[in-house]
Length: 236
Image (tube, rainbow, N blue to C red; front, top):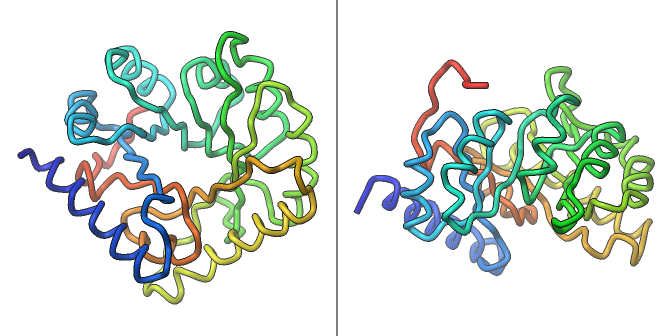
């Protein structure tokens, strides 16, 4: 058994334990293995251990991996900041995009999504902590953005994503996740059946996994706990 296999078992057990502790169905939580800066061979090992959802943040790096691993039945999630000149590659190669924070980017993704592919699954990124260094729409601007995205034909709006400011302790970690969960509930109440597909909360990483599960996360983006620490210099 490889180290990656052991890590996957360990993380899966953590998810199951946290879900049961907070009265969640573990099967309602999807583990997205974040493999940015890691080689394709590591993803292949993760796939051999049963993982099918892979998260990437750097377009050129991820497109190369997708091509190398096309023999595997993987679901690719783009979770990083989106540059306008990279939207075509994202629209053509990914199944999910978690990090949409503007109408401009959403329109480009819709226009550039190939017609022979299913609509692109999309989560709106919310900057819940108001950090200048973080991408995402403000909570007050969320509803107008959702209203416009719902008009775009090649996108399927699936939920919200957030990366809160790091904090210590589960109680402090839960607070921003609770705000995101409340925003999703408010959005569903406001837009009714037009957002029936908005069932997902993409939140929680290796360091705050339990807090995210406690507040309703359905997509956990876990990298370090599966693949080990990343190189300090990011590969773009």
